[in-house]
Image (cartoon, rainbow, N blue to C red; front, side, top):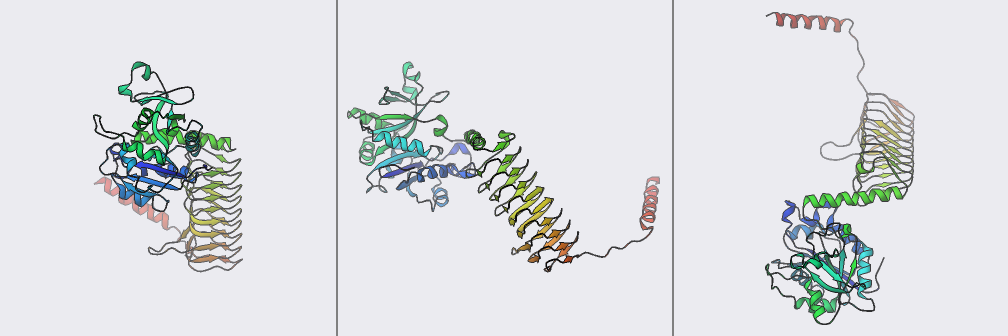
Length: 455
C-alpha cells in the first residue's frame, strides 16, 4: 500500500505513563509480543512514509534505544505543555519537508495502514480540507470529545465533553485526536494555538477551530473503535491484547486453521499459519513462528522462534525455542524441548527429551530421556545425528559428537566420542548382581526400625 503524496508521520510518545506503574516506558510495553509503538511503525512503513519523527520526553533514552534502526528520527518535548506543543517539537526535523503529515500517538498502536491512507485521500479530496480528523463511534461515548459534522463529513464543531451541551453530548462521533494535515498548513496553525485553559496547555484539536475561523473547513473520517483504542494502564493493555487476539484467532480460522478452543490460543504479532493446521487448547506462540500446512499442535505447547514444516506434529506439552526447525512429518512429543536444532523429515523425539544445538537426520528416532549435553558452562557445542539413527532411551550425547547414519545407541549410554555409520555403541557400566543382598538389607533395616520404636 502506498499514497500518492510525500508523507511524514509525527508520533507523540512524550508522556510519563504513570498509570502503567512501570519502569518500562509505556509505548514499549508489548502487545502480541511486540512493543506497542512498533505496531504503529510497521503500519506506517507499509505506506512508504518518507519521514518518521518520534516525539519523546520522559524516559526518552529507553525509547530511542529500543527504536534505533527503525528509520525514525527523534525530537524531545521538555517540558510537556500539551499535544500541540508536542507536535511543534518535530518542526525542526521537518523544516524542509513538503508534503502531508500524519499525527499519531505512540500509545494508540493499532491504526491500520488502510485507515491512514484514507485520511490522506480525504485530505486531497475536491473540497481540500485544512485538517482531517480520525473519528470513531464507541459503544459508550463516555467523556470523549465530540465531533459535530455534516452529512459530507465536514466538521461543524469539535467540543470537549465537559464543554458540550446536551445535544452535543448526544452525538456519538468521538475524536481520537489523530490527524492529517499538509505541512504548509500544520506549522502556521500550530503557531496560533493558545493555552487559555485551566491546564495552561496547548491542545492539538484547536487547529480545527482556528482553520474554521479562517473560513477553511476540516473533515472527519471514521475508524473502528478498536483501531483507536488508547493504552494508558495495564488493564487497558490487557483489554487491547484480548481484542487483538480475538481478531487474530478469527483470521486464523478464516484462513483455514482449526482452533479447538480459540479463546485459549495466543498468537504473536508475526505468527504465520498454513491451511489445515489443527491447534489444540492452551497453545502459546511467541514471536517468530511459521507453521506450514497440515501441522498438528497438541495442547499446552509453547512455541517461539520456530519453523514447522508440513505434516509435522508437536506436543502435547512440547517446547520449541528459537532456532528450532521441524521437518516434514517429524514428531516432537510430550515434554520434549528443542532449541536451535533441526529435525529432518520424519524424525522423532516422542518423549521427555532435550535436544539443543543439534542436527537430527531424516527418520532418526530419539528415545525417551535423551539429552544433548551442549553446554560446558562456557561454550555451546553441536550434536549431529545421522539419518535413520536410533538413540536408545536415557542417553546423554556429550557434544561435540557425531552419530553416524543408521547407528544404534544402546539405552542409558553416555557418549563422548563419535559413532560410525551403521555401528552399535553402548557406553554404560557393566551390570552386576548380588544374590539375596536386598532381602538381607530389608531384614536388617526393619530390625533397626522396630528396635527404635520399642525404646
